[in-house]
Length: 115
Image (cartoon, rainbow, N blue to C red; front, side):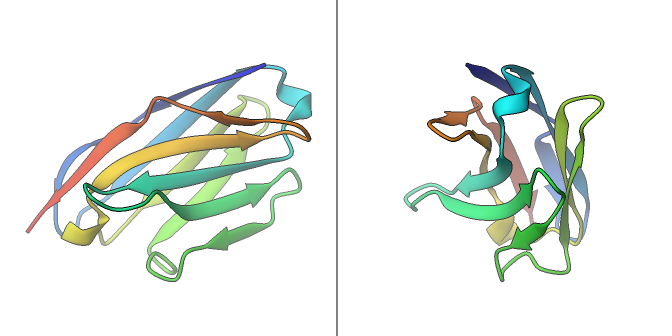
């Protein structure tokens, strides 16, 4: 079992920055990759950023150059630094951890970007 707790969401003006954190606990060695997803009202949940155990990363085209995912293995955390935020980045952001057999989700954190 893996437990995930997100933090760092909030309200920010367009052009501003936020840093989201996801703290993992439980069966940490079983985690292969960790992702950040987001879901805006009326839209499907979408993958925002992905990081493997080895540190390789991938990003959605919409956030490339603005968002950076990183992981601190010593603290069992994954962070999402979000810069140059836009109103269309407004969503609930979810942390996700993948093991060989399961997919775990955090409770989500709201990010609201005002124009």
